[in-house]
Length: 155
Image (cartoon, rainbow, N blue to C red):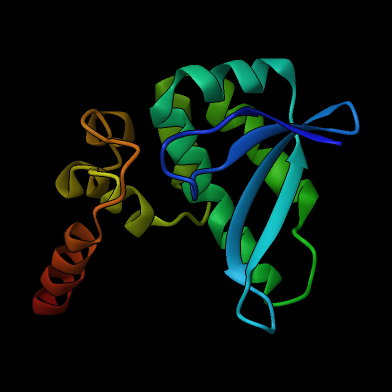
């Protein structure tokens, strides 16, 4: 039996469920061969759950870091659970400066953070927490369109 323990207003942001007695982060990402969203899950701890529930910025950062792993899974391969779990402690439990350094060494979805209202200039300088200071749960894809257009003009 699955019980939803925490979800945000935006249904695409990963939610926390209890599945077979275990805490699990669940997200829909990518698509299968029928173009239906794929469902990915990974185990989390109570400490991870507390941060996800209480800190939107870290929740969004985790989402942006997990999405490339979901994309790499393609239409049928499983999520690289070891790689996904390896993101949890550094992003959710690390000091802000450590998290920002960590993001220099991983793939992450900058467009996802832009859609949530991140400051593009601060993101570009690696100041993720400052960039996400005014982030919201609601996605605004017009911000991403503007971001993409500005990047295209800069080339």
